[in-house]
Image 1 (cartoon, helix red, strand yellow):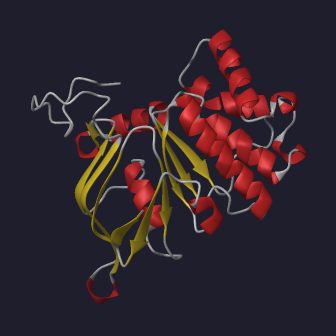
Image 2 (tube, rainbow, N blue to C red):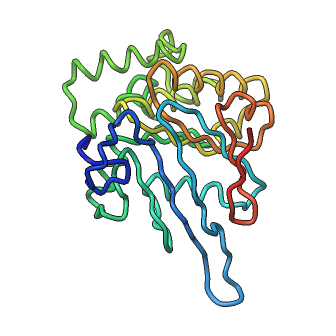
Image 3 (cartoon, one colour):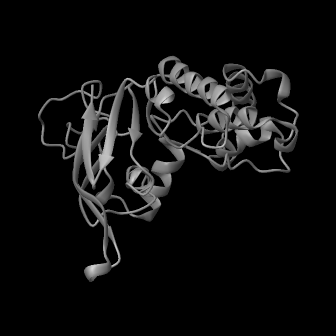
Length: 245
């Protein structure tokens, strides 16, 4: 993790410390799809910051650009214009290798579809990111055990996804997202396939994890009950951000 840049990531010597620097800074972000009269303007000059250790909920109607925004912040897509800084790193300055390392080491992703590997056990699924990083096997086993306990699945380590409920599968996915100790969690409708009660439990778990692990999180959701658990709510409307108290 690079910690010698200033708040803008430019190394300009402003003296801003890592603790003071926002985890995410978005500046005048634009993203369109298509061209001409048929162009869809998903984002129109979006700007906001996310402080460290905050759980931010992103709301908006279907097609409002929530997934587009999350993909840009996570380095899965590139904006037409604007600037994205994650943990002091300007994403536009990274090549594909740098973006891959960023996604592997500093960002954890949680998706609506869980994305677990069916033939692997819960423990093996959680350990996949650490295997990709070639972590020491003992370190990996200890971390997997800790994370499964953290999400309340210590007794389900040997079960495969098909043997777990939807809520349990999403808990495994949360544990997997935390495997490499990311600084930022990005979750796209993580409770979309769950019933209301299970979804609330998963969102409460994510809030607890953010605080216990010292992680920053951006969670896209349309569920009003879940929005109430966030530290802050940002709404996407007509390609712009509206902040709610």
